Length: 504
Figure 1 (cartoon, rainbow, N blue to C red):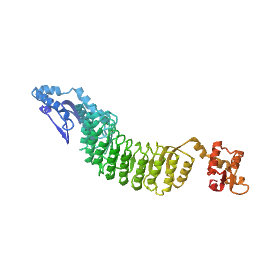
Figure 2: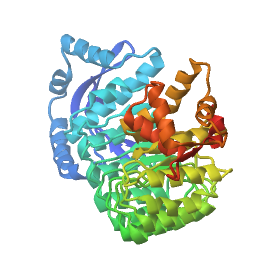
Figure 3: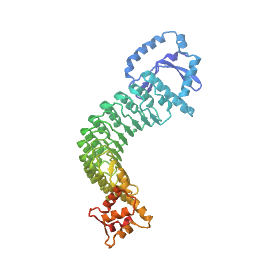
Figure 4: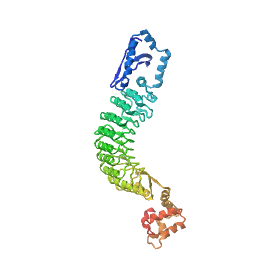
């Protein structure tokens, strides 16, 4: 190797600088070339400035020594050459020689950056260099590991989805990523959930959003964002049209934070999916979000689960649904929505023609609220609701019967509910009665008419009970009582059986 091997070289890539003060073997084609490069990082490596100055001094001392000695020290053994090349071949197997060379280059840069920052390389990154989806969730990358990763990704043109959930990035790691996104134009989806970003990290991300043209999906769940952080995001997203999916769940937005986000919703023209679950957005904050929803024209899915919404919040959402024409999914699971709150919500559902999915599980609803909801859907001929989740509500027989009636006109209607075993048994009574009588070539009307000797179309409940027992129809005591209540809804002890001709 000639004297050029000891000169200092710098490689600049936009905002970041890269190099290394160590000896390494790089395999290019069939040759192994020895390189010695020294590097520093301006924006991302500023904490190493003192170390760089010391290395410059060491480099000057090296230049004054014997050139032959330098060449002897740099020259690797034959075994070292073989091992270095084999290492890259093992980690980076691709079908195309061109892709292999590019991947090899990125792998080298990444490993060198990890060495420089003192971070541990993530093997998953090296194994999936050609994939569009880079999933590094739960790898403990940390701020320094993020710095190394960001250096490589700033010029990457392959990865479109970057997953970095729960990696202890902190505000510093977030800053490295946002700097990288100033030059990267391919990443469209970014997951930074559960990374202890706090208010400082929120500010950094908001600045990135103000200049963002490429990232469309952003997940920021569980980052201890408070109401001040909400203002950062709201200011950056007012009028924004790029972000389509935003996850701000499991944070600490409350009254003021809800107001900021509500104002953002009123002005935003891009977000289609918004997750605000597990935030204490009660009272004024919740009503501000509803006011924003009322005039919003792009939002399609809104998750407000586990926010302690009660009657006031349900009423404000009902008013919003009267005007909103784009929302197709509303999740209110795990709130304080009771029967009265559902009635207030139904004030909007009675006229809404776009909402298709409504989730209300884990709320203090009863069969009464479930019936109110079902009857509202039946009355609204324009209703688009096809999926209703009240899976934690234990309904009674009347609800199930009305649901079956509604499905006759709307076969696509899917309602998830719970029912006690006795409800299921009672609902099978009519089927048991029909089957028993059909085996005797009779109908239910024939059974009643046989008891009505005078042709009054009325039969006493006592005569009906006695006839069922004498005929040995296989109904237990509870099932028979339920059948009598169904036939005698006004408790007059008389069954006007002409009303049930359709049951035959």
